[in-house]
Structures are given as structure tokens and as C-alpha cells.
Image 1 (cartoon, chains in turn orange, cyan):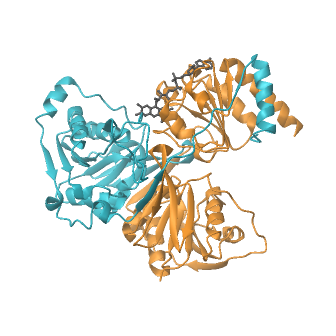
Image 2: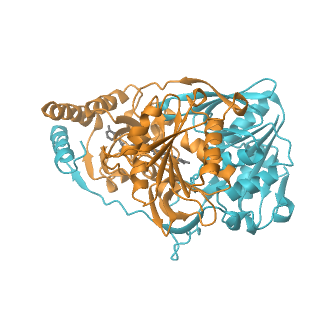
Image 3: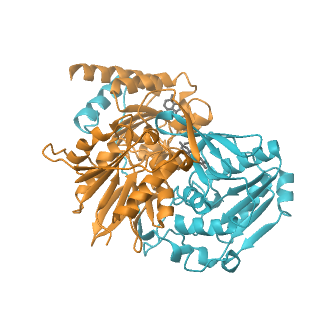
Length: 328
Length: 264
Ligand SMILES: Cc1cc2nc3c(=O)[nH]c(=O)nc-3n(C[C@H](O)[C@H](O)[C@H](O)COP(=O)(O)OP(=O)(O)OC[C@H]3O[C@@H](n4cnc5c(N)ncnc54)[C@H](O)[C@@H]3O)c2cc1C
């Protein structure tokens, strides 16, 4: 009988992504043995952390061919491991790579995958996954009744990370990696770095977003200044109107046809609050809106609404934040 | 190049979602349906490839009768023909059973590349392209913002958007499935002559019998992932409106964010 919960860890450049800890923290609440799968090159040292956050066992797949993410290599390694180990539940991150290989893994194994989940629970040994649809305008509960492993990908930044337990250590099992160059049909040639080295919108704890009111790309600087003052974990987003007008790049778009984000704090500057924009940021824990129109729909969803000119307010906010941080 | 585009008709993004009283689905009355916005990028890219390299563009869509409208829109943009998987048996599918049906429709066709959106903005599963590629035993590249097909049509180089605005450059042999993301191109509008011509372009309707699949493999019966409940997220209440001079607003907000919201 299939048994246990498997969690596919995500690491980047030798560091575990926070979503990995979020998944493990959830998995360890579910009362079954938790196994983490660690793929990469020279990553074995991360196994200890995985243990402290909840893994009872870590399967390490360490090989040069896994140094960079590859759809084909990840799919093969994971499917082979699942066929051998027969887990009941398989969780992975809903990140750029997770979203890429998990549906392929599910199709190869002939099982169901709930994508981009925001909650998980266990009912009589069955995984119940909650996930948003229509960009979060509604939610559904899903189950995989007749196939295993029951798969779910987990949206980053939603589940809480539990405290590490320094006394806990996982059993580490080194596994062979049976991937040859012939298995790689799609090949990574190069990685082009983004314009900024900032945290991704989907992982940010604070987002300062600008809309059409920013008027041009240069004005986004005042948003970046505020973001810098707020510290690491903060980044800048944009409405579609700002992106389509060329003030911001495509990867900065928040909304139904952009990124769906859930930071602790979302500061909307000169954004009216169209339904497609709200869909992308409504799950932010705290929403601040700065808009000169008191009737702007964004104020209906904001915890704090500031009526006024963003070009005056934002630089003053930056100064206030700097003062506050100087006292910390 | 024989180019296929997988396209889905979805509710307009303006749609306010209402759940039916049983919690088994959304209320569909009065919904306006459109081509999935990400699929527009796929249609546009297909037309561009055809303009450069010659060939045909075929739209493949699974959906109820009304989905013909979205297929016609793609034909009006310039695609050559449509394949419409339409049967009550296909209803209620998950990504897996959708991919199954699409694969059955695609297998008999000749194709050099398949394009589609990176996700459909209704169920937001973002899985069909990968599942379909797996069932067809071809590669996929997801979240593509730039695509260059080699002159011989045998391979392509795609840029894939990853975290932090970075992009992975991936070389893939064709046929492959390319899942398109915003930024790839600017979709054209259908012209009036295009709309007229589209009326005469062929749409091949494939029902369950013609697909060669059994009713157990498709739609709700073939779904591996079952939705057992639909519900709405809690409404966000409007909070405090702060008024005053910009200086006061800034001081007040920072204080509230620190002391009340504990967000900074
Ligand atoms: C298929 C489809 C998909 C879409 N997807 C998305 C999406 O993913 N994300 C998205 O954001 N939109 C999306 N949209 C677009 C959406 O409908 C809106 O058009 C868009 O969000 C508006 O952006 P905005 O709020 O920046 O601009 P506007 O609606 O023009 O609002 C500008 C706001 O700035 C205020 N303002 C002006 N000057 C100042 C000032 N000096 N100080 C303070 N406030 C000021 C104004 O009062 C106004 O409220 C989509 C639309 C469609 C049709």
C-alpha cells in the first residue's frame, strides 16, 4: 500500500527556498512519515536543515546533470523514485520549476495534481487540497480519490514555517541518478539575469506597486526607493496599465494575467483597483492604497487608504520609514 | 510548418464569480466568454511563424458548443482551420482527462510545433500543456516570452521566464509544446475581411466516438483530480481612510503599519 508523504525540496545555488520549509512544516502536521527529495549538485549538506524542519528521511539525488533545473532530468528522477518508493502523497513547490515538471510527473504517473494550493489537510489518509481558481475569485477543495501518489503543488509564501528542531536529524539516503544526456530533449543553454537582483514578486514579503498614474518609467524610481527603505524581501510590482504603457516590465505585472501575489504588505500607488488587478493581490495580508480619487475602487479592499497625490506622499513615506528603521 | 494551437474559451476576466447554492460549481448565467488571454499570444505566435516559414495553423479546442465562437475568433485572426472536441462526455474534465482528449485529436494530425497559453485563466491549473506533451511523447517549454524557430523547422530556442525577472534560454528539438506567456508578442485584432473569411474556414467537430476514446477516459469520469466543493474567499472589508496633508498621512501610515498592522 502506498505510504508516507514525499516533499520535493527546492534549492537554488545551494540554498533551500522558503517554500521548501513551508511544505515540510505542513507535511509534519499530517501524522505520516515525511520524506524529502533533494535534487542538485553538491547539495547533500542541506539534508540536515530538511531534517530540522520536519523530514524523517531525505533522499539525496546528487549529480552534475542536476546542477541546473531540467524538465526531463527532474521528471525522470522523480518518477523513477516514486515507482520504487510508492508514496501516498507527493508535494512540490508551485515555482517556475515546480510548475514546469510537476504536471509532467503527474501525467507520466497517471495521477491527479492539484496546482498552486493554498492549504492542505488529511482526512482518513486522503489528501484534501484547497486551491484558488479564477485568480482567487473562488476556491475549491480537491481530492485524488483513485490514484496515487496524490499530488499537490504549493504556492509559495502562504503556509507558515514551523520552528526548526535542532535535536532532530533525518536519515539520509544517497540515491543513484540514472539520467544520461540522451534523456535531455530540452537543454538549458544559458540563464539571462533579470534587470534587478530583487526578490521575486511571488516570494516577496512587501510589494510596492505602481499604476498608470506613474506616468513614466523613470518615476518608478520613487517606488524602488521606498522598497529599498523597507528592506530586503521588498520588491516593486505594477498594474497592467503601467506595463502596457511601458513604465514597467512584463514580469512585474500583478493580477489575473500577471502574478498572483500574497505578501504581508501590498502598497498600491496610483492603481484604481480593477477586478483583474484585485484578483492578483487580494490575499495580501495588509493592503495600503494611495490614490488621489477618493472614489477609486481600490479603497474598498484596502486596510489603509490614503487620499492624495502619490508623488508627494511616496517620498515622504520613504523618509518616515528610514527614520523608523534608523531607530530599530 | 504544420502549426497547432491549443486554445480554450474561458469567462471574460471581468466576470464576477458566483457559486451555485449546492457549492458544486459556478453560476454560468450571463457570463461572457472569450478566448483565454494567454492563448491569444499562442495564436499570434503561430501566425508569425506561418508568415515567416509558410504552412498551416490549426486551432484545437475542447469545449461545449459555444467554444466555436472562440475558434472563429482565432480563424478571423488568420488561422486556417479548427478542430473542436465537443461532446457531453468531455465535460467536467481535469487537466489529465483534457490532455487525453486533446492528445487523441492531435495524434492523427501532422504537426511540427504546438503552441498554447501558459495557463487558462478559469481553472488556473497550468497543467494541460505538460500533460499533453507527455502523452504525445514530446518536450514542452513553459512560460515562454521569446521564441525562435530554426530555419529548418527542426528545433527552436525559447526563453522561459523564471523568478526574479530572469530567463532561461532553452534549446528544444521539434515537435515540442510551447506554453506562451505575456511579453512574447502583441496579439493582432481580427480584421473585418478576416472575420468574413473565417465564416468559411472548416471546423472539424470531434465527438467521443470520433476521438476513439471511451467515456471512462475523458471528462469528469476520466478526471484524476476531483473538485468536491466550490466556495468564495472571505470578502475584504474596506478599512481606514486617512485624510490630511501628505506629511501627516505619511507619519500616520508608518505608525499604523508598525503598531497596528505589525507589517513593517
Ligand atoms: C483580459 C484582461 C486581463 C487583465 N489583466 C490584468 C492584470 O493582470 N493586472 C492588472 O493590473 N490589470 C489587468 N487588466 C487591466 C485592468 O482592467 C485595468 O485596466 C488596469 O488594472 C488599470 O490599471 P491602473 O489601475 O494602473 O490604471 P487606471 O485604472 O487608469 O488607474 C489609475 C489610478 O491612478 C490614480 N491617480 C492618478 N494620478 C494620481 C496621483 N498623482 N496620485 C495618486 N493617484 C493617482 C487615479 O485616480 C486612478 O485611480 C486586464 C484587463 C483585461 C481586459
